[in-house]
Amino acid sequence: MIKNKYFEDFNLGDKYILPSRTQTSGIFSMFQGVSGDNDPIHYDVEFCKQKGHKNMLAHGIQVMSQTAAGAGSFPSEVRQSLLGMIEISGKFLKPVYKNDTLYPELEIINLVSQKTTGIIEMKATILNQNQVLVFEGIQKYLVKKKYLT
Image 1 (cartoon, rainbow, N blue to C red):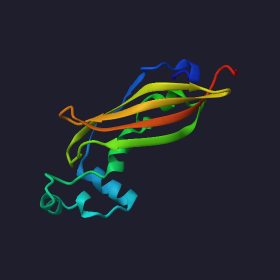
Image 2: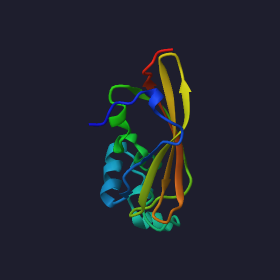
Image 3: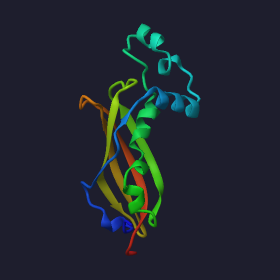
């Protein structure tokens, strides 16, 4: 069992390597069902090719969701101290296509101490199978402090 961490237990540069995932037809279909996004750019290969793409284009939020901290060890580390995610943003830098494999990573880039809590700011990045940066963003989490100041 992983020992619970509090705000003071984290350091700048701490990294969370998340599982790689290949963007299969199944993932595309599930995301289409969950999001309700029925734009053919995300499910019709011929339509995509007519628009100059080599395959089905992944929805941006489908790509961003690959950085969900829940896929890694962070939630286990803050099970008793996490109050919640308070902000998320991102930039979609390159297209992601069906059958691309994505390699997401989170890195702590800022720690903001408050009276009873702290904000952990993480940079989210995703590389594809060619080591091309396809996404970068920010996630902020509100975490309890161990010692109240």
